[in-house]
Amino acid sequence: MRLDRELPCVEVVELVTAYLEQRLSPLDTERFEEHLAFCDGCSTYLEQMRATVAATGAVADETLPPELEDKLLEVFRDWKRR
Amino acid sequence: MATSTEHAVIEALRAGDEDAFRALVAELGPSMLRLARHYVSSAAVAEEVVQEAWLGVLRGLDRFEGRSSLRTWIFTILTNTAKTRGVREGRTLPFSSLAAQEGTGPAVEPDRFLPDDSRFPGHWAVRPERWEGAERLLARETLDVIERAIARLPAAQAIVLTMRDVEGFDSAEVCNALDLTETNQRVLLHRARSAVRRALEEYMR
Image (cartoon, rainbow over all chains, first blue to last red; front, side):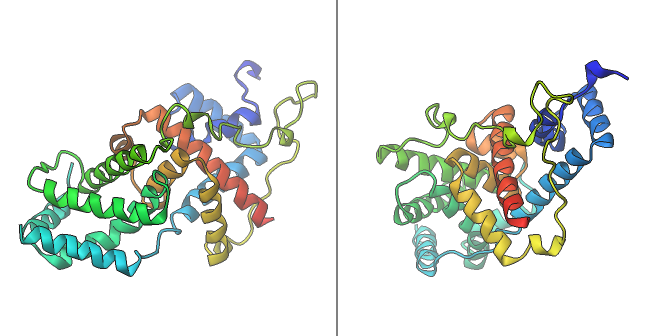
């Protein structure tokens, strides 16, 4: 047992983004993954954060208001005639 | 660095190709409008900012050297245009030190963890439950939950989250376009994602 290395869950949830961004030091990455191996709660939490990122990526499909699109085309045509 | 596809787009724009312009506007325009809205007072002003930014893009095309990607460069112009307009309107800017104090709470409510005097301090008292049904996460209704959660975020967090997770920029691109340090960007992203996760957890149970 290496209790001095042990991370509590309350700290793990604050490190999730740094972990996903691969910004944790090698030692912290090891402690993080060690914790996950034994903690269902934090494994689920990490899964939820990954699912959150994926679902947020699906929000994007929308279009511009048509009047704005028309105005932008005008901007382009004016610029072309420069 | 601009990619070869981007170089082709740039050449087409310089040559006055309207279809190329339309396609680029369709791709980047919605997120630009979304972001501009965080800097200025109304949707109408945000639309003006987007127009002004595109004019800036077109006028700058000949000077664009492809040191950054085309879209990073376009978003840099957008945010600078939006900032200038926001300042003129006397608004608190999203990345000002004043705004930095907003939404700085923990990722998860403290009462979800065991107290310091317990046997396992800081470990889950109320664990998160698995979200069943992955397809439900992508349902229109769920996406509305996410949109509403983003709308409630402090502007700086909403902007970073939109660029990273909605638009798919990487962290270097976001740091460049918004002039943020990597750490700062990551802290904002963390708070934003944590808040969206909380909203989803509420909804998914």
